[in-house]
Image (cartoon, rainbow, N blue to C red; front, side, top):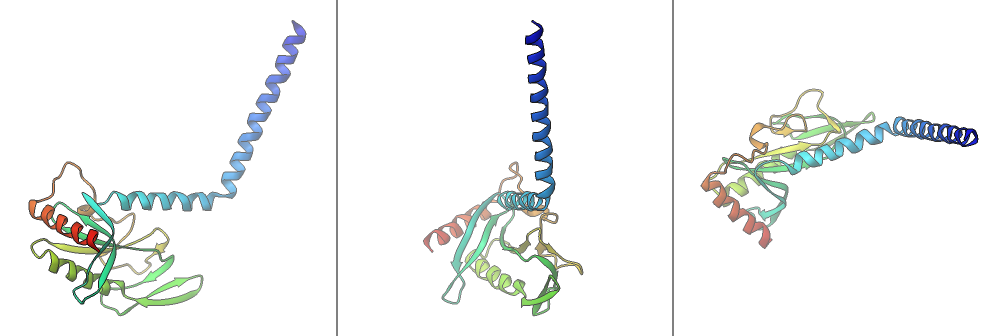
Length: 194
């Protein structure tokens, strides 16, 4: 019996050592990859947030722009009292912007990059959708992912994970107004036909 007890004790010591070694290796792996793990966590959180906006959504909503062409918006969102267009932007770094300037600036790793104010295109898209469903309020937002920072502030229609307006948050207890449901079906049909 003593040999059996000694063998059992040795086996227990090896198992404890194996478990302890595995935990140390796992902790080291997590420590060394903490930035990538955080990046993945924020990416998943962004995707979850986007997928849970409004009462219903159409992803990659395509519609006539009123000038003989078609335009595409990342998401068409049905709210209780209207329709929202959402354009998803992935611009890492610091963004310097305002409603009424022609170009915005992205500062990334010490270099600056200018790009056209995306609110201008969003306004055209809102007008085109409003012309299709004139009896329903239509608005729009630019959703910047977690990599963007706005050191000097940003326009009200620029949102992120931490600044989603209440009107866009999903509430399954609330029903959409009849006019909104009708407009939604019209817009879905147009997008399906495109």
